[in-house]
Image (cartoon, rainbow, N blue to C red; front, side, top):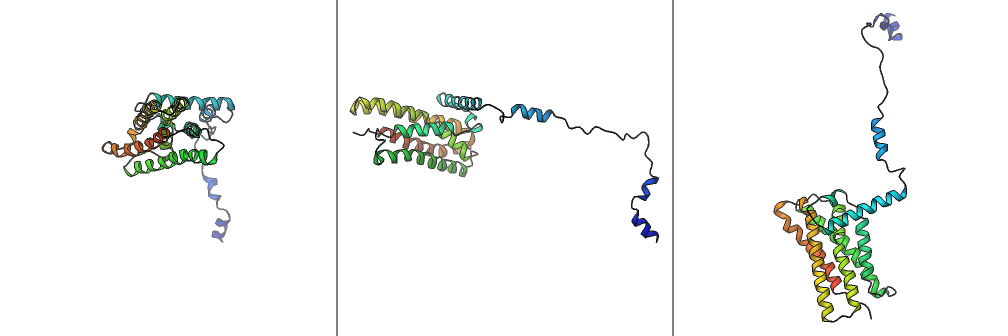
Length: 228
């Protein structure tokens, strides 16, 4: 019977427990709001669309400046985006249309070739970098390679202007110089950004596919001729 009574009253023994007056029995359970306020300050959910677009445009412009003045930096690797590569890719593809936008046989394949070369080339370069012990990711590689197409895109615009005057020997010589300089610029800029992500004794093996990547694009620009 005693055990049954104890089971029915599990907290009966607590009545004999006394709490000393020196032990505080009150406290503050309020949660500090400094962290949430800090997060609200950096939140972009309530930011106007105009400010968001302007901030992205400034970021793209800063990356273009990095390509114009290439130096060993991790800016493109750390803050990567695909807006600039997409803009350059579309611009280069449109310039390669050859004035035959209404002809599917002339314009269609060239537009697709630019996208295929950039995406497939980026995948190959990234896989090669990973196999050699690099630390660059796919999107970082795509960002760097895409932004460094800017010199070749500018060369394509210059070649279109030169081709307006004809397709003679002088025109070819000018286009050859422009494309060669842009090809070297793109290769140097991309390797400057990717150098820190590669092992020191294997950088030459990483530069080689980058060289081929921009060489193919430069060859497409050099061999371009407007439709008659």
